[in-house]
Length: 67
Image (cartoon, rainbow, N blue to C red; front, side, top):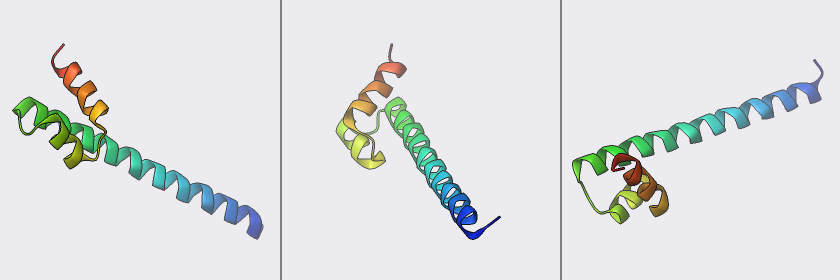
């Protein structure tokens, strides 16, 4: 493998790792928000702020929990 190919491979790997971390953080935030909704802890706005999710995302989670 030449140096350019190695650099392209490394850049792709780094991007993949960053994307995986971001997806994991979003998944964790959704789980936390869901638990807060089930326990009745905080307002929808509070949950959105604490989990870094959008208010609309928290509202969608609430709708799924309370069909």
